[in-house]
Length: 495
Image (tube, rainbow, N blue to C red; front, side, top):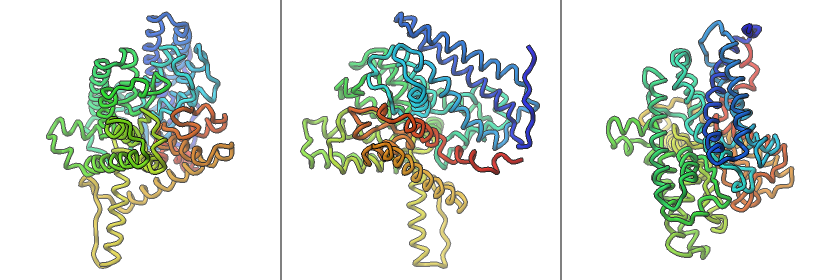
């Protein structure tokens, strides 16, 4: 078969290499589809035919793009990386939604794309009202999609594609990584990526075993293990974690959701050097302090609204909600909306802040919050003593004015997108609180809902346009906005 050639353009973007990498990504995605296929065959589910067909289609398309397209150069520059990091998530979602379209409980295109994007971006918002009707193959595919998206699609690929290790791998890593500060990477990005994935896999395995030791079945333990460590939040039960009514399950998930909110680079560094590195880290300390503060506020709100109903209502339940909201996991263990307006307001703030950079979580990240607080402090000091010069650092890393402008720009766009998304839903008849909470949940990759999309609701109430807009919001949040926004700047496409 003749090789395919793409006509060169004046943009300077290496389209051929981008297409080839996308083909390799699709081959990886096809490999992951083998797991739900095996589950369908094991339980003799009709969806096995669906997964066989889609697996072969994805594999053939991926192989065609990988082997038939011959780039003149394997080098990926900055713009190539930005474009690849954005398009990869769309490609994964387009092929990842196919099982939802043709399974025994089919969704339409807008619903399927929303569900797939919610999975890969670890948002956890779902349009499936009755997940317990879905086949085990579909439930596992939902969980796997979140596990893949936890550390990132590109990061997984960097582990196995040698050419990217020496041709833009570091740049690709930063295009997909979260937050403003990252621990130093090794000389070879592939080696660093492997360490991160090994740690991620080990934590997942330990979590699955611990859940299985409790009142959770083996299959449910696998699905919840994959979605908890990735801070994704998809569940196999309509009532979420509340369906198990188990303090043990909640306690185990609290621990691993917390771990999912910590920088994986910091964990590796602490394992290699000293556990003291955790407490030396400004962001980690702030993470601990915020959890304690929010937990105390939650307990006070529960007692103040007379929602006390036993020891769990002031111990595991509020701590579970804090961990779930702050790490953008989005698991629900009860009707937290009944705890009052104070809890709803604090939940907004927790979703906005998020956890640590370099973790699997969404939100603005504590790193940026620290910078803004330190900047405010220094502005006040300099107002009092204008002749003195001050420097700002987070975790010992100096943050210059250019980085400061990036942070301010990010937070502004982040907030504006949330407002725009909320207005779109309000225009479609959603109550204003429900609309803005849902929009914020999607842009922060959280998945929690309130009111219509809350504990007893679902995102299937969104109109088709709303689902597409929220899907774009989830993608923007996962790529931390700037990577996606850059594609809409005319200069990006010029040579």
